[in-house]
Length: 336
Image (cartoon, rainbow, N blue to C red):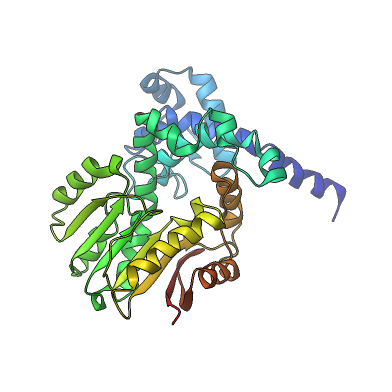
């Protein structure tokens, strides 16, 4: 490899922060939403978002060169296929996720060397409190994070609902399941067994409003702590994007509570839905691993690491199946 090529690669990675924050600026100003209506000049956009036309054009030109948005011969900017997901109206919008990560995660990553050295979360060092405490103290950021997570999981859950036969389960418990978003695509697919969603007491009002709004009267919200106890007697227990928030000792505690709850339901299954590190050719699962490390002192696990973890908690892995990209479902049962 030529030295110039090596230098270009290093520079591209090194100056990635400029790309992130340029995109953040354009999305925070609301430009993608305006471009939903069609092409517009920098002057028109600047007037709408109350910015200087010249500096807005310079920021947009950066993104055009990176493959986001396009610019026609008349100097008007427009969406391309890769930028449409930055609109808040897009069904799988990345806007809320960007607005959250470009602040909370961005500041946290300044402390990543310490996380790499110790294996511990550095979010408290960056923000003065652990992640969940920070959200509790900042309801507006908590709402933004919740919207971002909901948007990111919608398409994945719709695909899961059609790929897996959930109709075989007499009762389903979603452990740490937020408002119960898993059960909307299942209901749309005609699967409506009795269901329970377990999450923190702070989620109660939002969950009950969501379940009522979506007509999910077969789903019951239970406030609790999955480190202490999990509702008993279901045929399927789901852990969806839960384990990657925790290091192995905490994961074992969660899994042990689930296994205890399964003792009264012979034949019960556990489904773990997670990003699997190295599960596809893209670098995303590895990047997310650094996000989990810096934020929680946790990790995105490889398939082998999930197998070791589940085995240590007394489970036997029965199936590992791809959902989309590096997202997988891992089905396990208590080891007899």
